[in-house]
Amino acid sequence: MKQEYQKYLDYVGGVRFWIIIIGVIIALTALKEASSIVNMILMAMLLTSISLAPLDWLKRKGVNSTISIIIIILSIFALVGLIGVVIGSSVNSFLEKLPYYQQKFDEIWGGLSEWLTANGLIEDGSSPINPGKLLPFAGAIFAGFGSTMAETLIVFIFFIFMIFEAESFGKKMAFISPDSSDSTQITIKKLRKYFGIKFITSLATGISITIALLIIGVDFPVLWGFIAFILNFIPSIGSFIAAIPAVLLAFIQIGPFGALITIIVYFVVNTVIGSVIEPQLMGKNLGISPLIVFIAMIFFGYILGPIGMLIATPLTIVIKIIFDSRPVTRNLGIILGDGKELDDTGSSDMPLDE
Image (cartoon, rainbow, N blue to C red; front, side):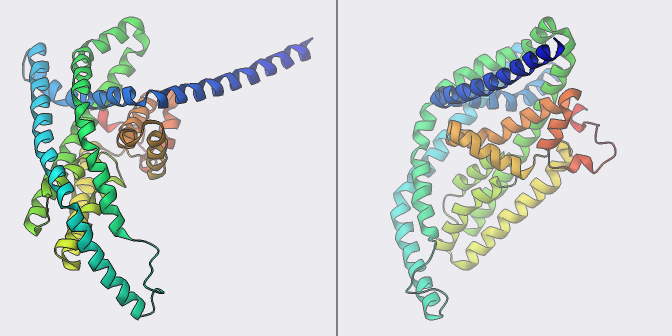
């Protein structure tokens, strides 16, 4: 009798496993089909998370809660509008000059190919790669910027509702599940501090890149600074991706020396801000494994498209914060991390709890 009962339990467990797998597949398929709506909601959530730190600062200064939210909303609206005008103008100008850049790069690349062929480094002037193809690719990405901005209004509406709900979310969780109230507050506190610090360091990165490229003489420095600001939310590889179009343009405009200086600028800025200043402000325990970052980008990029690649890292950070906040899932948080928290004997201390 006991053996039959155990066999039944094993059967039920196996069926439950496959039900969960099928459910996950169905959920991911539905998520992919509804990616346009999901992307707008996730962008609004990202915007809300970034706004939590300045909102909390205003409240600590004694500003009324409703007035604080209105100030944040108006500030975000003005900032997004300004970015839309400035970056939109830069994108249009870049697209207009793209054929000229492409022609000039083809001339430079052709001369380089001839030199490589003459010295026997390649055969028949052929080359396995052509970096010039990145310029039209970048142009195609920028051309889709207009459609993204067209969705900004819907994202902003989602954001308004979310920012008003943010204050009552903790109270609702405390009412629904008093036991999980403390962990929820800890998670929200960590998110608020993480996105606040990340926004400031990303902004500093974008401004530094803009000023440096303006001094060097690279066209559209504001555009490249904005891209550096956005992609700084993607650790490890974001700064590398942001540097590629600016380095190519510097190579076309100024030559190899200009490209070298641009590479040095990106390296110094990202090293100082990303590897020195940000870890001191953030603490060690939120580092994400570069492998996990890459996997998350591929996964969310496939499910949600380019927006998914952008928000993949913040989503992974949120998941790690939630895992780190609960003892039962803390080991999973360590798996997602970069291993630095294991270097300290006091790795259980959470710097963002302060």
